[in-house]
Length: 297
Image 1: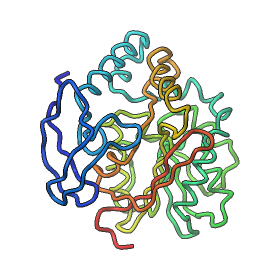
Image 2: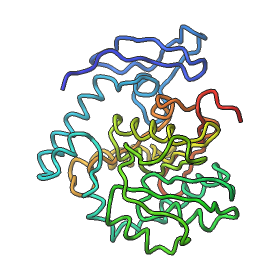
Image 3: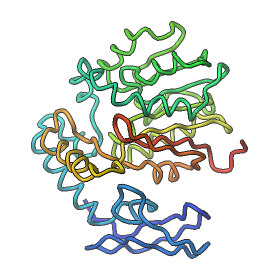
């Protein structure tokens, strides 16, 4: 794979973009926007400004990911083609489906925060991308204003079997779908959730999923993304170390999983963040509410 040394960096304040040459053997920690003059710094959990605001990770990060992909491909056997893309394959989730709900108590604080950010209404048309065993939909069903039209999609057959047996409302739909190619009409939904999904995909697949989310959202629709991030505590370093170690050492169960600030991917897909909350309980996570660029609210 050819190393990318140029990236388009976009200022989150004014939207000014410029293609810059990235340093090949170091991480750049500051960048002065030529549009508004703001001094950009890396987002929490990112090594440099290009990984935070660019359309490509920096060369050191690219090399690190290639090394992880090679190690994962070597250990993964039949999963090699999936592992090389950096995305967790459906087979992985099929394998762990029956055990997945054992850790839901660590997801629930962020899932509940995401629902509160979204402010669901009974008239909403909701899509949950990467619904898994239906964890977010279960919380949504318990919320005060339960939407009548809800669709949950996932690529894993076994995870969806668990979702269908989770006691969700009968009128809600559960479908096996590739989130990169959603089989829904443009503008069908008013609210799309992507909880703990983007962080198990490669950046390329993550952008594809978010572009599809934008396509199926109504012009005034809302997107809510949840992703695990580096905690703001003394435990940050061992937590990050464990998150980086497990995918390489145990690819049959952790391939593709990573800590990820979703802001650059959200912005690259044509969204602007309206609200963002950090959740320290359970998995340290960030929840972001975003709308289409230029949407009137």
